[in-house]
Image 1 (cartoon, rainbow, N blue to C red):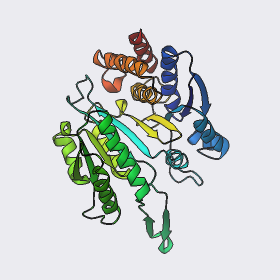
Image 2: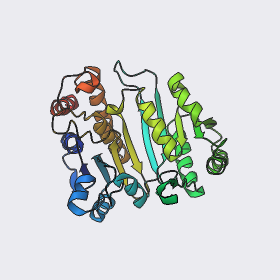
Image 3: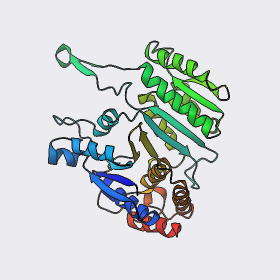
Image 4: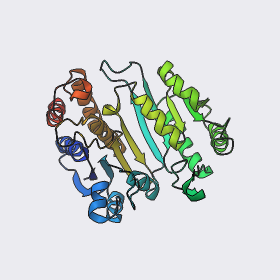
Length: 332
């Protein structure tokens, strides 16, 4: 009996998590759910956006599903709970599928996976202010350990999933030390995968090629900030953030989430699109080895999108609850 931790978070987070919970209960009544607090609501209650008890619940669960969090600016003591969670739990892989859907907003023929390093880079958290506030410095940290494990994960995924090419995205022509290290390690590791072609691409070019010819990609692996930006760009090729899901995966914990934000302007109005969270649920089920249930849910989501049983952001007229019930009916 798997245990899944639910982190509702802020804004529309509770609504989309409720949707996922209902679908999971339909798929597998044996699932045991626990809940934790995260985000601005947690900060207002506990004085921390990521309480230690939440981290413990994530560690104890077989997998975790996160809704969304609000990160308000200029509040003393507040930090990004998602970045902190990734670092505290060493969730070094950010996995982001980019795949066409049967929808007018989606370009067809796209199917690739982003591997984004998730714990260092420009999100290392090492910042300081100098010259009486007139100069701000953020340090970009690229380590051999961090680079090796994300690169090897990408090549292993390519080999296990019949992918023939991995694009290593970098900016070593300018960031000679940090990206230079990342690129040199990619060249070392690729020797162990003679069956997988390694292609090197400067991040500027990758941003352009994602627009020009996205069908060329099979696997993209890159550093933290580049992966964050490029994967959001790529999501707009296949339906937008309303269908964009991701996984944060480490050796001892895994957290799955929609890519969209907390959208406080539509919270409680029944307008939130649950599809990204449900697609994150597909990833969660795959991670747990429940591949049959993952396929069932993925087919149900595809069917609802194809027949426009969706919320208004995808051109439908359904509420969050109606969309959820349509997916449950498609499961049956």
